[in-house]
Image 1 (spheres, rainbow, N blue to C red):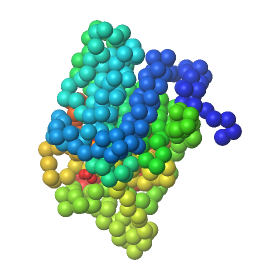
Image 2 (tube, protein in one colour; image 1 turned 30 degrees about the horizontal axis):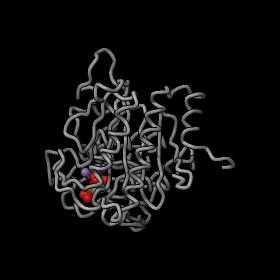
Image 3 (cartoon, protein in one colour; image 1 turned 90 degrees about the vertical axis):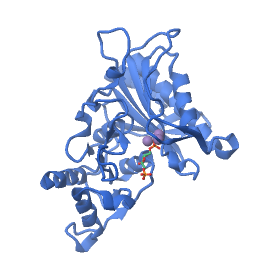
Image 4 (spheres, rainbow, N blue to C red; image 1 turned 135 degrees about the horizontal axis):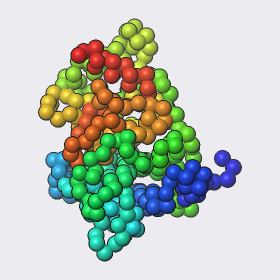
Length: 336
Ligand code: AHG
Ligand code: MN
Ligand code: MN
Ligand code: MN
């Protein structure tokens, strides 16, 4: 790339040329990116900033919160509440929705986020991230309710994530392909480093937490068994395995070189559809993956078509290279 294109310029040009980013959405994305920048700084300080370790509190998901889960949640709220672009926010770390206080102007968007994804990797210095999804507040009534957030993934108007790894990278879609921006620490701005990302349809790499194997449903077991059988098995090729335990990092790898990621339903908690959250994790990541030519299902249906029935709804996730996701989905259909 000859001249550097900042995120700001990219968004301005999207607004001008494509006409599908209204200025309020442009501001929103700028503010989210700014929040990610400050979370990135906090992450980088680590022990020196006193941000490691647990906070001794539990979130609505029943997880012990890490200090950085709470810090990141606060950074996103404080940065976004006053700009006039939002009506309300929802987060993995908050039980109910967060209404923009009355003292600020109300905008037309709803922001949903997983402020810190991959919490178990914070203290061990492995890549973590922030995932976000943007919806439009339904028209017609003045206030905002939890119901307004219960929109299928296809209704998203923007989605993205920021990964805090060896580099801090922001990945974004507004429904016109996927773009990647790398944080230039000297300039303090995100710079466009790749456009129109594409996930190859085939792969030889799968990602799943193998320690749960004994709890899986038969179609998942069948798929992984066939991968493990390698060249001698029905797939006729050797597969490699990766599991980072940060969805952002696993999805980032898949966007970079292909692969399949699965966090399926399992027998440990038969009444729960899965571990990952539909609104904060599966939908935004799913839209990014689809925009890059990949696919996402829950084993049966396209995840983005699921009508959510509650804010913290969970879902089984199979995403990545299209042909592999279709294969796993077919195995589910064949199992009946
Ligand atoms: P979070 O840290 O936001 O709660 O999400 C963690 C998720 C996801 O990032 C990852 O893929 C998965 O949990 C890892 O789960 P296991 O520890 O069960 O492998
Ligand atoms: Mn969590
Ligand atoms: Mn997460
Ligand atoms: Mn989280």
